[in-house]
Length: 407
Image 1 (tube, rainbow, N blue to C red):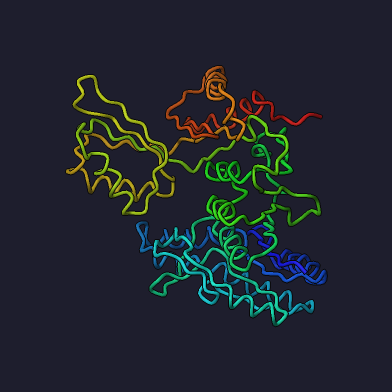
Image 2: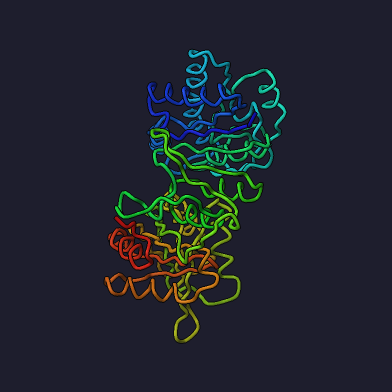
């Protein structure tokens, strides 16, 4: 007997027929003698509609009420999936985040899991039930509903897998695995049989939509074996595993991109000690995550232009914070630019090989693509470019690093 967590994304539960299809997949595992916990997302499009309603009422909304509204999508799916299982003779019961409970911090809209006791779920398994869990949600220290950020159902699934010591966490989605880049843009993209936790974390952090970054981080920490599979085809997926399980390491494993970026430039900021804290402190207090940062000091050394990127969804909130702090920061201009994209080259092979950044820069230059900001880590190089060049950059980099599939 194995203990398995099966997570189904929004497209996998988009309508009643697809929910019935999910129930049949779960039944196969149950019939094989396995104990199963199912984690579900909201039905496709539901979360977007709920968020739109919140924004329609209040652009700078109370995040506690945002969570109360947006978490409802998963509740519907969990109940429907439990009913679908019952209809085909599989004992099942739905669970909300607070019932398990999934304890989180109090950063509403982007909460982080702090603990998941496995006792209640283990009791359900002892009764022979499938636990159908509403993903994406938890409970704050003061008992309020929290949500884990977009894609948070992946994090729910991996966290539950760690809590109940599952043998495997299967993530079912609308793609059949992890590809070297987005196959909708680069037709020669290849599916990977295996990818390391570190590479998957970088690709997810840098825009790959297959897995949520925090879910990969949690899987790496707890050594949860994760498999990415299609809900619509019975074909092998991609395993996310330890680096030492991958026999042949490539220099570059994938090209990631994100169009969910916005750039902010603060012009002519006084170049003095404490100015960076005056800028990024209030942004952190407002739960705005800052990513890429570049600073250009003027020739006289008295002022500096400071440019950084944030999530596009946080742009209005960030601009309001910076306007409120203008007297403290003392900048002359606040210049937002939402029309940017981040493109990244990722691979653990970069640790032992030089020249990846140079090849990336030369390739973009040959296509007349200007680089606005650069950041690097041990296994990735990221650049910020104008959004209109995203597809051209992806195709060029995918080819030059030898990732194109051969016929």
